[in-house]
Image 1 (cartoon, rainbow, N blue to C red):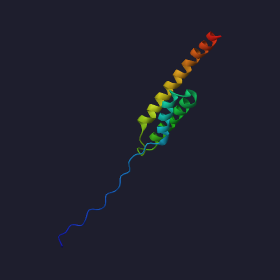
Image 2 (cartoon, rainbow, N blue to C red):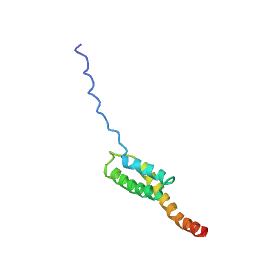
Image 3 (tube, rainbow, N blue to C red):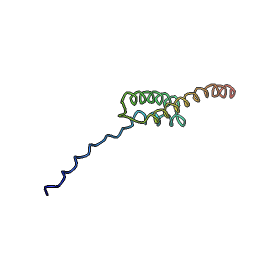
Image 4 (cartoon, one colour):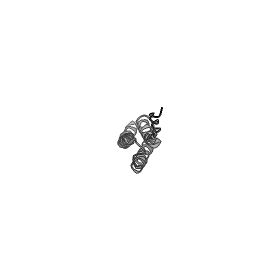
Length: 98
């Protein structure tokens, strides 16, 4: 029994990087902007995406999810462009109907 080795020290729990909820909201709002109320959802999607990217960069590796934030940003910007491009189309349809 004198030759027994002591048990190894307990393992240090490693923290898993989290995804900020702002990044998830950015993606959710961007997807919703293609189906309902592009003005009410695309602009907040872009804002949330920028906030999420800023938080991720400032976290020093404690946060992840930059891909989700980028997807929300890109989709939000695409929805904004499509929404703005649809305004003249809608105006011409309304004027031609009169």
